Image (tube, rainbow, N blue to C red; front, side, top):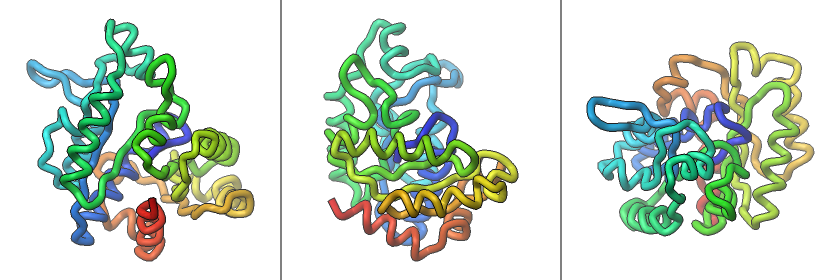
Length: 235
């Protein structure tokens, strides 16, 4: 799972998809390899996105396994690592991924930010997807700007030989899906791209905070979700 930008609802969609898979009786695991912007809780630091994914999937994996690399400051990983005097360890990410991959029939991996967010001086989120040999599901905003941001993300991923399994349009604000752009963007993207275009998912503050399986199925349809997962599993 990747997004066209930060704040497009990537975690809400990923968590809802994990909950939907779980409701279908699938053995689903989750991973957010890199997180920034940790929140203090008691004597430690936690990542809310990783906890939401873990709760939605019912995973019993340790949070350190779900998110092997984390930084306190809410910055791009390469910048957060530099400021912390560290480097993003691709070895740690790959090791955790392979453990989770062996444990689960299906594994949903959520990236950080967009496809070209730098992880270090050489690698981006798209490069990580390629190294993990994972197809991408792109979450894009539904309103104005979605076409440009989506096409840029698709081009960046394809340049790195990452297959696009599908695109989910997610309404970023009240009324975005019903706006002129929200109504015409799905049609335009289906004409421009030969990949499944799902949505738009309607805006819901409650579901953004606590996404669930029924909300996602009602928004996108059971058959569309099955086809999306089937297409993602082709690799």
